[in-house]
Image 1 (tube, one colour):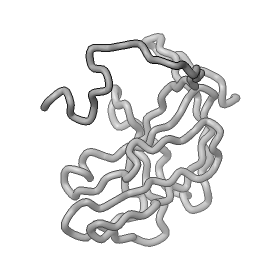
Image 2: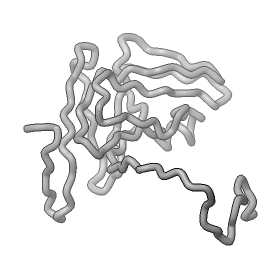
Image 3: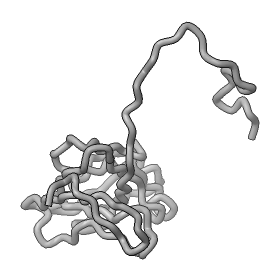
Length: 161
């Protein structure tokens, strides 16, 4: 089946088919999966050969052992797992990290330890969640003036707390 093929679910939503390639260092690990029926993100696991420790303030690119082919007009977003963030202060540095439809390299999750204690990542541990989302490429039109709005140029906290 091609990467551009679509699959219809029982609720008639159209979902993209994402081709996935398991790399040798991911052998034996679970493929991405949705843990509940209505989950937006699928869990991504660490394909480490040996445990890795993130000290407070450190960041590392954690391999997943997976490569994907997304259909045109779709992206994958790599996001933090809320449990790691809440319990350990571990997050994804560039959240959400964008994986473009034309990227064919290994997926990696850039984790950072915002916590106060070392955090050890083990092989097969769920380290991120991937959300597949539609995208548009905009057309840009240069103009001399922009239309007026009530907000105007106010930003960065200008609307209050």
